[in-house]
Image (cartoon, rainbow, N blue to C red):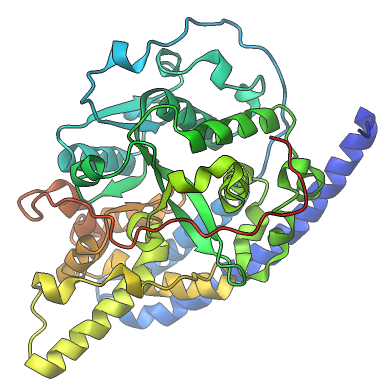
Length: 455
């Protein structure tokens, strides 16, 4: 093993950081410019009461969203220090919960009351759609009740809050099972039906995109569900994250030299990654999951069920397709029958028709934003219902919330996105329906590589 002194390592890191900053500007700057052009195009479709001051405010909100998304992905220096106190081992699942208890987990460092209002609304949607489930919000004061000190690396307190949540979600799902959701996830369906039908050893999750050449899925951990405890996939993934977190690569260059990523490093040069290429160090935990599943290490693939990303994933990925397809179907129906009535048959868009590839390049994202931004200032109740009917749960991000809050401040709930938030918690307007596994499938695998990776 090559050992370098701290001065040399610091020089390499600083050089790598400067290179990453240049690369980040080269990727994100066109996106900011594209957003400006997109807003100019959208001015024609703005409502009459939408003055130029509001247009300027909306532009700043969208621009800040893009910039904050870029800045939030920076990886801080990692410092190893022991925990000040070693707490007692958490109680077992049998000691804490009845056998039939179904749990939805989330983490917010400041707890439920410290969440943004829209995240609190999301948590309410979990309770409304799944009234028999127990919701537990982990925070920096209560996590020790459910997580062992052995579940966390010595670098825990220097990690980004998102990476700390990665570790906590694995710890509680391994020990207790259940469903983990990012706090900004809005839920439209109940989960009882799929919980009752899926096998205990399965891990259900969704993805960000599919690589065009290999067809491999870039998995995401914003939604993880497993009925049983000690899920095999989660345990192996947890061990790899723990080992890596003790001495992580802080730059893309450092990650490319790390043996943990030997089988996936070449994929980071894939042009289709778009802005995701700029987030590789931030997504290091997800790349370890990809590596584990793609290569079917220890036979984990048989325990994975991949949920369709446009029905369970990010809203800005799902809506462009669902909106475009919904409008197309409405036009066909209008031509054939003279009506666009919102009956169940007319609204349903089969997941099999979802595109495999979603563009993460600046122009692709601009196109997506152009499609979804009108949801903030247009009042289309029918479209809201169509979107809800065709999705199970949708993840918004902390960066998106500014855009949605802008719409709430300007129009209350009387806009298309506002109706989505209302429908999620209003069982009178949208009675409880059960989620389905339509479109779920086994993961795509690659042939075993010659490179051996440490287990």
